Image (tube, rainbow, N blue to C red; front, side):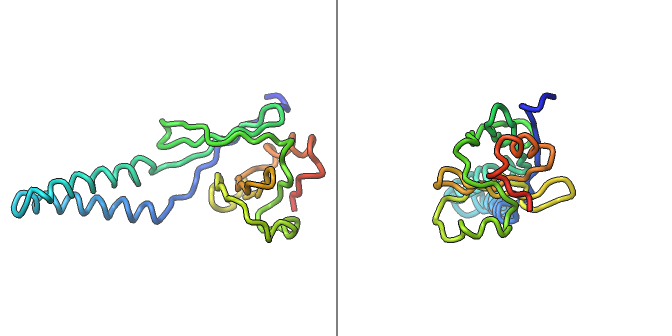
Length: 166
């Protein structure tokens, strides 16, 4: 693989809220079906809606992975659901990057009072291979990414003044 192209795949940790909501809607759907037969046809509608919501909220998005691709001073981020559905969510032009630093590092102190939108495309926590980095982009976005040293090497080479590894 050349120095101008790098790929990294990270798995996002499970979202507890989505898991609880998915199972709650599934329980309502299962318990609503006998109620629909005995009590009222209104419960059929409730049961079907709860079943669809449980599928959409949890079961369809049970496994979320992010694929980062570095090509020609750009990072492209794809979100992959359940290993079969892919959607490109972001293209970052690194020429417009203000700073890339380890999340919660001292290098980010100057950005602490800014009100910007947060986009989380990270695994959620540090692990043995990757660290969560914070990328400040165009003064409008704060993007969280889980990156390793191999993926960072071409970015550091082209933008050494904008990348803080400590």
